[in-house]
Image (tube, rainbow, N blue to C red; front, side):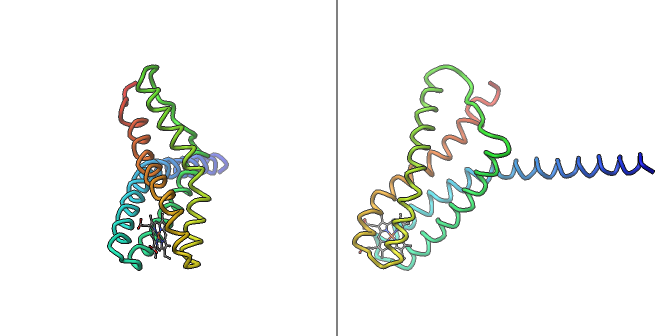
Length: 162
Ligand code: HEM
């Protein structure tokens, strides 16, 4: 009786471990996809405001905020469960990788207050101030999103057998 219960416990643990691994694999693919989607939404929102389509611009930026929140949740889950993957090698490609990673990380931290302020000004309809700060927020956000995809590709696909 006790042995059967122990076997059932082992099976249950194994299947919850398998589910956890599947979720982490899904998250590791979702992260660069969300970064790419964020970059596409930014470019589309920018094009919309340039054409004077204010409502479309607002909706695309709100969608982008949603995508970025989902990204942040996925990122925190990934880092807290598997940490960071090291980039293999000891050459100029690694120096390039570290340069991209460092600039990406610093700008991502700066982005948080910039995004909040840009949204705040837009929601308060202080559009002159919004436009001024948005011209800083927009390129930084785009750089962080695009380099997010580049970093994922470098870590996972540039040297898969190293
Ligand atoms: C962090 C999110 C946002 C970013 C990065 C952003 C980006 C921008 C940029 C770059 C411009 C200036 C375009 C140009 O050079 O002519 C702009 C203008 C504008 N944005 Fe946003 N935007 C954001 C969120 C929003 C939201 C949520 C709204 C609506 C509630 C909005 C409404 C507007 C309007 C009405 C303008 C035109 C301002 C004017 O020319 O007087 N934006 N935005």
